[in-house]
Length: 116
Image (cartoon, rainbow, N blue to C red; front, side, top):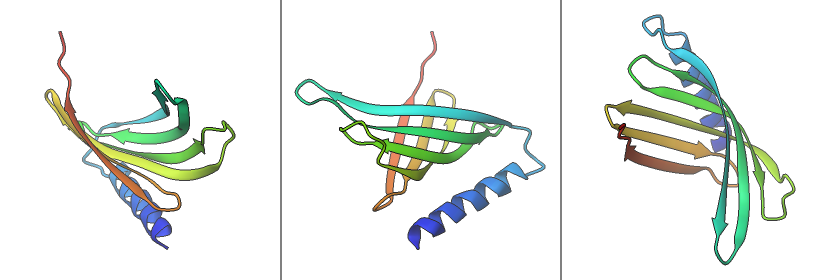
């Protein structure tokens, strides 16, 4: 139930954002592979995300799509839904992400980028 609610909420938000006539942003694809490597444990499980996104002129973005999870065994375990929303302003940025599964996990990231 919660999974369906979150997925429909993200889809509705993205549809509303994409339909906004005041925005002249751009669509993009964001394939992303995430894994962990430990000095004692070696390579851990991984997640392969295939997101479609939309970036607004003000630096805000929304993206979501399927996420295939690969545990330590290397065999694909399941396909979930994941997404991210964020914004940047000058050197600062922030992002909120989620992935569904047995329980929905939410993450928050903040940082800065300096160009030389």
